[in-house]
Length: 267
Image (cartoon, rainbow, N blue to C red; front, side, top):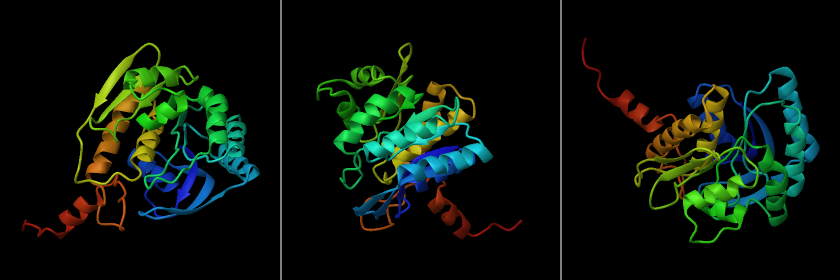
């Protein structure tokens, strides 16, 4: 599994979240870093893009030696980066591509400029097996209005060229993802976890979806399983880490620690 995405120095989102999600889903994770962020739970204080040539070189290195069964694409930032990623995908044959259109960080920092958004829509989305925008991202990509339903948004994003769309609902009042591929539409419902932590939930969802595609699941079944992984990670989220938005936890670390501390019953 290959993640083409930005690095989050706080470990909550970006390639750090992607690698954890890959491991949770039982696949080997590799990375091509597109940008380095100085980031914590409170916010993003600096972003530095990796050169297009280095992005392509990272992908070529792992493709030629190890091979890639599926790709997750996250933070891109600039049009030049989008172009580099499109070039790099040409090295990967038929590996399915999942695009998470990272536009704004949890803290509100803008991570995709307008020129890059246009490049993503025109050159990258048509290459995607699945695109996973949240509601706000789906509106920004499609130009849809505030009154459009999630089903409408999924149809409008699908018209941009991907083979399937999952409009995620984790930031809305109802936690419902909407899947649409032009033939089949499905609502994937889940519970809200107000006591959890959600930083990195979108990265986790898209990475898990890509991992399940690599394992041979259909896009719809991969979307259902990815929803479960992301929901559980939010429920177990580490709210006590940092002063801001705590990261999701795909491994249930707090529960494992509590279990280790419990007295063991005598045999």
